[in-house]
Structures are given as structure tokens and as C-alpha cells.
Length: 382
Image 1 (cartoon, rainbow, N blue to C red):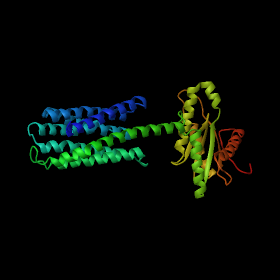
Image 2 (cartoon, rainbow, N blue to C red):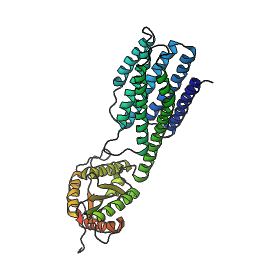
Image 3 (cartoon, helix red, strand yellow):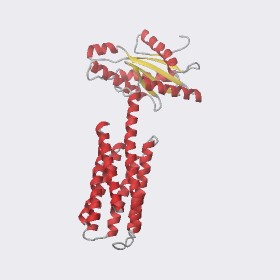
Image 4 (cartoon, rainbow, N blue to C red):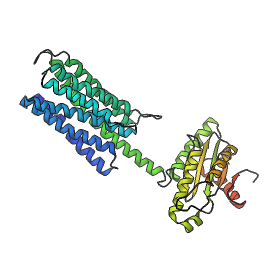
């Protein structure tokens, strides 16, 4: 077996393994759109490398045209998948029109013009630009790269460099064989490594996303999408440590819905779930980024407000209390929601969240005792 056959076999094998791996990932781990799109990308890659082998060994222009179409389609699907994963707007026409132009140019270069310079230039240049767009789309906003994302970004960037190097070396071709040595050298040395690296890091991104989802499920309440008690405890440990380290204020609010059991009994659990989701959303909307909202259990929620005194936290909760009275429940249109709130400051003797919860619970009990639908701040005198 000669070197081109070994090279094409490696590339075909990589595309095959990736297609199988991503198919399994799509079937069993959430059926996300971008994973399906990447699966299609590598499936097209399998066919494209087979066509490439046919064109190379049979010396058939038709097979080379199919190869070019496969490269364009595979690269486009990879870029579309990255775009889908990022959640950014996706306009398929923005991919379809350049792909059609590149396909037409490639067909003309192989057919009527028989220009080896254009044949070697058009596809690598197009794929290089497409992968550059993919790398930019992968860049996260308002957070850092995760390790799998960073590895994928580096692999895509390296792929861009290799593709543009191939396009540049194609301009040196001067005849059927003259000037092709550099093109072949770049392709044979770098293409297999970069192709495999891109494939492996794409799988790592899928695995990393799955791990992130599992971590979120462990720490978040599935009904309200705020932190659960475990997540709240973890966030509180960090918040208390940070407040002590930087000598900052920290306020805890414990709150629950007044008459929640009666709402459940009178209107059903659907109305109760709607009340919990609506209340949680009001709490999330009321606090700042960096503050913490969690469901402690049942209809009881806990909030940690950073750099806030109890009085400031009470003012924020007053807005929530007023807005809650206007919250409509589709399953119980006539129901009027009310809530009580207990607020406590972080003090010198607090070691963990439970220390603050004890005082905030005492303040909440006082609010209930005084007639409900109100806010009570814990004080040592009380």
C-alpha cells in the first residue's frame, strides 16, 4: 500500500469513528442539534474521503468534483454546528450562497479551465475561512473557555492555518507536477494530525457539555431552575468566605409563600408549580448578577445578597412582595399570592450557612406571627 492510500485510509477511518461516536452521543445524551449537525459533517467526510480516493486512483475529474462538494458540505456543517452550539443567530443562506459559489468555481476549475492552481486554491481557501468563522463563533461571551472548548478552538485555528497554507502553496503550481511538492508536503504532514485533533477535541466538547449539564442538574432545582439546597450550600460557603476575606457585608433572606398548602389543596399541584416558578423568577429578577437564589425545599427559598446590609436586602424584597401580588396563575386565576420574608446579616460568629439561616428563620417566624405578607429583619434585641 502506497503513502496516498495510507493517508486517505487514515482520514476515512477518523471520519468513520467520529460519525459513530457522535451518533452515539446524539442518541443517548440529549439529542442536541449541534451534535447531530457535527455527526452529519463527519458522515459527509467519510463519503468525501472515499471520493477522494476514487479520484486519485482512477484519475477521474468527476470524483474530484464530488470530493470538492464533500469538503464544502462537511466544512459548512461543522461551522453550522458550532454556531448552533453557541446559540448565536443562524442564517442558512449565509452558508448556502458562499458554498454554491465555491462549488461552481471548483467545478469550472476542474472542468472547462482545467486549472490546477484554482483546484488547489479554491477549496482550502473556502474551508479555511469557514473554519475561522467557526473558531470565532466558539468564543464564549462573559466567561472563560472551558478546557475542552479551548482545545477545540486551538485545533480549529490550526486547521485554518493548514488550509490557508495549502491555498497559498497552490499558487506555486506551474504544471501537472511542477510546484506540487510543497502542497503535498503540507497535506501529508499536517492534514492527518489536524483532522484527528479537530475530531478528538469536538468529542471532548460534547463530553464537556454533558458533564456541565450533569453538574447543573446536581446543583439546580428542576422545577424553578434556581439552585437547590446543595447548590445553595456550596454557593453560601464561597460567599461567606469571600465576605470575611474582604470584610464585606452579606445578607441572607429566607422567604416562603403564605398559604401555599391551601393553594395546592384548593387549585391543584399545577397551580402550585406555577406559583413556585413565578415566585422564583421574581426573586431572580430582583437581585443583581452575583447574588444567589436557591430553593431550600417546598415553597421556601433562600437568597444571598452580596455587599448588602439587611436593610438594603429588605428594600429589595419589598419590591418582590408588591410584584407578587400582581402575579397571575393560569391554573388559578382568582388566587392572590402573598409571601413573608425574614432577613439576617452575616455576623462575626457565623461559620456556615446554617448559622445565618437560624436567624433568618426566626425573623421569618416573626413576620408570620405578625400577620404574614411582610418583611422582618432579625435583630439581637429581638
